[in-house]
Length: 367
Image 1 (cartoon, rainbow, N blue to C red):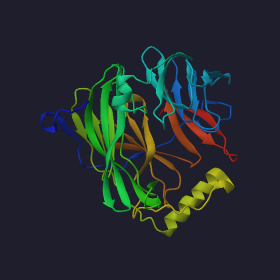
Image 2 (image 1 turned 45 degrees about the vertical axis):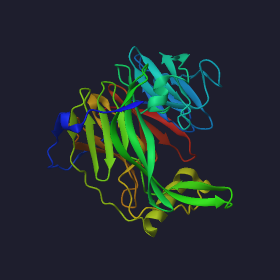
Image 3 (image 1 turned 90 degrees about the horizontal axis):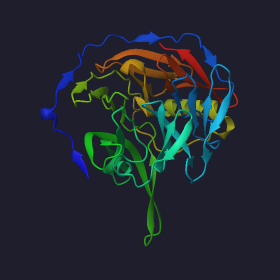
């Protein structure tokens, strides 16, 4: 059972100063290593203590590898399957103490977790682990104290007979525990509902409405939790002691989802996947949300990167950088073909898509 968190009335609150200066623009220094190996999709990167990196390729290639960025050597870790120390779909990698790693298997299905030590899978976490039922199979972070954060669906709000919005909750639990605390209620993405079938045997098709996004949360290794709200766009932090740090609203243009924006989105898709791009008749929201799905990245020194939404006046990849006061302090911009996939203590890892659609891993000094 999920227990309600301590009421806000008894929670220490620190509010960030509302005045905001324009964020400084971060320019990455030249890369110090580029991996020659091609990937279909670099999903997650975790730097090990010796400088090598674990890389998950969440695509039809479906693999986890360990790579040496200096020598270029790449070795596959584990096997695809349903047996011990095997995974069905390589998902996100979370750092654990002792140079260990939590590997999420089949994140879209919430199947189970695997534990890694150095560059080897050592154990499958059983699918009946109580924490899996509490936080869900696709966590949003783990900390060094053995706690796990999850964002789970908690119903839906019917906005019209053909339009609803998911309700989400951020839940924290001990990795070996069976009880959880609800930390925040979040707004989910919006969906268009179409009834099909017969009157006697109806069923419904749910399609996400373009331009909408779910609010998100991420737990850092030190136990701090970042919560990113979309409307209005702002960040809050929860400290390990449950003190709340509220950030100011971040400006956003809220562009209308008109023909210009739909055409710009289609052109971006064509640049990414070429002739496979097809016109989509999915309904769109009236205005575009400020952030993208799965857009939170834990940066060194406790800072948070938030992936901004693209639109016709901002076609590149942009991240807002927030500090522990929940203020936006910098902006990281790079070409549309690049995105941040992980950090080391002193490095940032960038996935770079080439003209053929393959991805390579590049490492830069940070900041």
